[in-house]
Image (tube, rainbow, N blue to C red; front, side, top):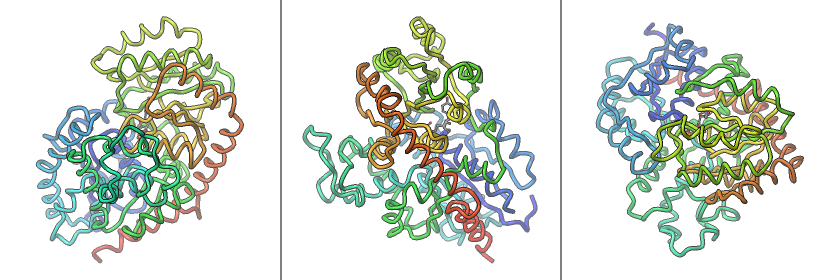
Length: 463
Ligand code: UDP
């Protein structure tokens, strides 16, 4: 690697959604004349080399290399407790490693996942700036940031049973954020380790040189204004996947997926009528109880809409047999449903046959739906998804949030509400937001300009 070119270390949380977003950022920064070392866990590196094409593109770039980290936690992260195991292993294993890399190379800056707060400790005293990249929405970031205010005002811990009561101490969300819309960690005991961990880490963003967010100003402007009071140097450069395309750096078919994509579903979609299909997927981490799976399945079948459903092999708790789950469901699905283990999601959402997205509202999925102009039926699983799904419904008016319940009658009713009864209304607002998203990443748009500003900022560091 040429040592004259500014060198950046990039370090995501080892989880598909985070690695995915950081890889996209990497693909945007490399052509701007920066060298990049990308820190990745050995497990994620193996997954990426399996099916994703992004590592081939990146490895062919002379200014890029992966640095593989051994010894990080490799278990699931579908609960706060398990996430804490990852945080602990990052502190133990990755902090000394990151410090060594910072000291060994002439590094211009570190771009660390803002949830890896320890990167600030690793860089302490080295003079190397740390930029945080939070891969969540601004609204979820702001809810995490506000947790200490919720505790001091007595709104946390949640007492009593009325989860529809409004929350008053997340500024800018007073009129609509209910208790049930707070990040899922707020539902646990106040002493809960994860709750404090996510809140403390989020507050540490104020100590970073800057904050990068995968969002755009027209989507989250008012909440960004709240965050800027504490973190003035913010770069909103999203939606990243659309930004890559607007700069001709990727195509719809490029894949960052850890799983093998089943592209047969695209042929199935080709046979469906325009905007007739419900696409259902709960991302890479969410799990369902078997009862919940069956409620969703009955609801989808009863809605009489054709559906394409991603059933990951580890989606159903305690059942690691994708084939068995598929066979059970396919008995009643043949006419209208198509099941896959993993879909080429961006291509699916861009397909003209897709009329709505039943989603857990992970931030990547949410942005992918926004860009494709596809209305949403939201069923948040955990963490930031609870906040995102509330915004989808009452702020952006892009769908309906069916948070916390998934009984079959509700699934059927809400799918029909989005795809039939209020179809035009949701399609209009989804198209409008998609236009704003594309405007932001095209030349002269806010995200486009912010990325150029970020590159200039990095190049000016330490010279
Ligand atoms: N995804 C995919 N195929 C699938 C399901 C998901 O390619 O069948 C991708 C999706 O496009 C998104 C990512 O996996 O980029 C999921 O990220 P998100 O933030 O939505 O959720 P998480 O997996 O982190 O819960």
